[in-house]
Amino acid sequence: MGKVAIVDSGCANLSSIHKALLRAGITAFVTSEAKAITGAAGVVFPGVGSFEHAAALLKQKGLDEALLQCAAAGKPFLGICLGLQLLFSCSEEQSSATNRLPSGLNVIPGKVIRFSHGLPVPHVGWNRAVPRYRHPLFEGLPDGAYFYFTHSYFVQPENPGHILALAEYGHPFTAAAARQNLMGVQFHPEKSGPAGLRLLSNFGKIIADPDLL
Amino acid sequence: MLAKRIIPCLDVKGGRVVKGTRFVNLRDAGDPVELAAFYDREGADELIFLDITASSEGRRAILDTVRKTAAAIFIPLTVGGGIDSVEFMGELLQSGADKVSINTAALKDPGLIQAGAARFGSQSIVVAIDARRVKSAPPEAPCWEVYSHGGRYPTGRDAVQWAVEVEKLGAGEILLTSMDADGTLNGYDNALLAAVAGAVSIPVIASGGAGTLQHLYEALTLGKAHAVLAATILHYGAYSIRSIKQFLSEKGLPVRPVNRYAFNYLPEEAGA
Image (cartoon, rainbow over all chains, first blue to last red; front, side, top):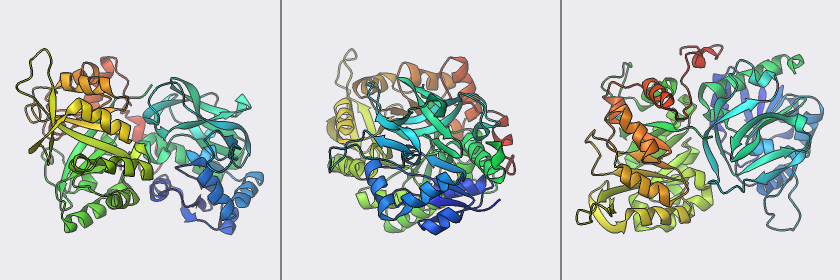
């Protein structure tokens, strides 16, 4: 298996995900170079913090083009937390400068919305993700395995077919999304114990054999 | 629905675990990294390091410990003890901690909670509250006073009001220790837990007093806690995390199961 690029957009501590990938048997490197990303065998795209800020950083560093190129080339791609959200069209997270909704990479149609059900936000802790259909990313995991979440926003794909797994917090929400080579999880596999490591090792298997998708 | 969390707490001093090493059969049971990895494998949902030294050498030591631990475990890690600045919070989070827990410094300067939450997000900021029952309060209307400096000095603050305030300031979680119950093994102060948990909407971690599995169950039900900190009951008791979770699960509480297959489903490191 070739190496996996961990995209460094300057807004997350990447050592946890790096260590977790290694533990899951995946050789990875952290990079903010467009060339290194497009040349990698697979892409892991983590992120925490504000959608608008992260989207701006991607643009500023010219990484948005590289990520779009990877997406179009069919390269296995795993977004994590904000990295999942940035795959979508736009976020309703309030834009500081303009009245427009800040836009993401727009490779999965849909938007990013905030929990507004009166339960504590952010949603932090261990919750169950139930896949809606068989997918190699969840291979070998029991239905409803617990993963560690910490977020205030969640993605809502326009096409329900892109909802890979659901979790429940006041109402069902998308815990994982997938569109062909593009996969994303709202939880943190690097903080989710053995279940998270298994999911990462499954991602490695997909890179080694993209026909699994 | 969120799982109820079981959180082992390790007292670390100068890079060594100073309590809670008795029964664990490890090559070096005083090594926080090994002990942390052990609890991760056992099924702990999170870990808390309480660093008892706040000297500058102590700070370098805890940063180093956090770095090594974060590389060895794959569950969230909280670090507390002597944290008194946004800069030090940042260093701990950069070193791999997921949350920082502040106590005395927040009592001195509540703005620290706000500053930390603004910079790192509420999910990274835990406020620890050490509370003691006010002896003169009538039993039918109990109240609790907040203590600082590891429970040494009374602050005059009411625990429930302080909890409400720290939530407003941006704390993401409250770690609530009953100084009366701590070390007794007679059970948590469930009235204190319920009073605080009922007054805030952020999670409350129960601490102090657990001696039996029933005590843990009571803190999570009567006390309305979202998580239980386990120190003595794990380190010196006869209970494993597996047995705790099995008990709670049989009682109908949602817990993240510790399954045998858990580590089998890793290709290489099975049983490592």
